[in-house]
Every structure is written in structure tokens, then in C-alpha cells.
Image 1 (cartoon, chains in turn blue, green):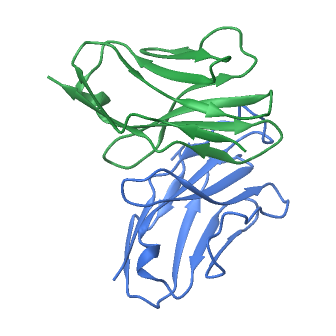
Image 2 (image 1 turned 90 degrees about the vertical axis):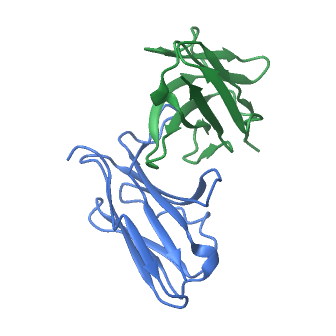
Length: 116
Length: 114
């Protein structure tokens, strides 16, 4: 497809388990973003990748969260030792330019994570 | 520091009428971009419209227009001829030039009544 894809669409896990969330950006897009959206809330920035540059991890809430982007394309967000407060929708977005002010982000459908 | 404020948690509009969703922002950067996104109940964020801080005219995209008042730091979204399918959450967002981070407002939930 032409859009951003994310998998799984839903993930239920037990507290303390690790989870991996995947994002496949729009082909050719150099920038990739991860956000977290808690129920009824706005978007919380987590991490940003631009090309081959080192990612900006300033939004990651704790060291349990990490992300990587392989080959400048697919990204994986990993949450270790999940906690109930990690329950949220995790949204991925990509954009195609070098990061200018008009750089429009296109979002995937999100992964709904539920930690029991 | 950049900030986005959406003061309307919920709005109701009658089908076929126009509605304005408010957004104010704060930034010290003279160059910035403003975005509106729609999030229906399916959860996907859909890009609607973009306004650059140096754009002379208000942005328009079909039934969507952005009422950009730079001096007042407001970027209200106007939806004309509302449709039932417009019922959704709407988020205002801003990005400063030279930065990558886009910040989002808390959102406004729009309900379109038949």
C-alpha cells in the first residue's frame, strides 16, 4: 500500500513482558516519528529518525523504551518490562522532506497496546 | 517554548452548517508551520490543511479553510457545509523552522447532528 503501515493493530500483554511495535513508512520518506496517545488525550512525541542521522530520543518516557530504524526504512519501537501506564495507542508517522517547516507527517493506523 | 491551545473540548454543529474550531499557538520563532489533523473513531490521523507563517493568504482545501490571524497567534479551522462524516477529533499542530518536533493541541471533538 501507499500509506504508513503499523503492526500489530492491537496488542494485549501482561505487565512485565516486552513488546515490539512495527512501523513501515511511506516508501521514500526519510523522516519517521513515533507518538503515544493515551485515551482521550493528544499526541505525545516519543522519538524521531531523519535519514541516517542519530535519532532524537528526547521524548522517550523512560529507559524501558527504545526504538531503531533499519536501513532507513522500517522502525521498531520496543517497550521492555511493560507497565499498565504504557497502555495507549502508539502512532507512527513519516514525512518525505528534509525537515522543513512545511514537512507534513502522514500517520499510520496505530497500535493499540493494552497492558494487563 | 512552543505551545498549542485548543479551548473547545467538544463542539456541536448542525449538518450543512459551517463550524469554526479554535486554535491558538505560542512561539518565538518567526518561521513556523501550522497543521490540522482529523482523527475519526477509527483512530487514524488524517492530514487536512497546512498554513506557513509567511503565507500571505489563508490556506484552503475543499471544505476546509484556515483562518490565520498571525498577530493574534490564532489558526482556526473552518469547516463549511458540515457532513455527518466530519464527526471526529480535530487536532491543531505546530512545527517551528529548524526543528523537527511537531507539537499537538489537546484536540476538539466535533459532533455533527443530522
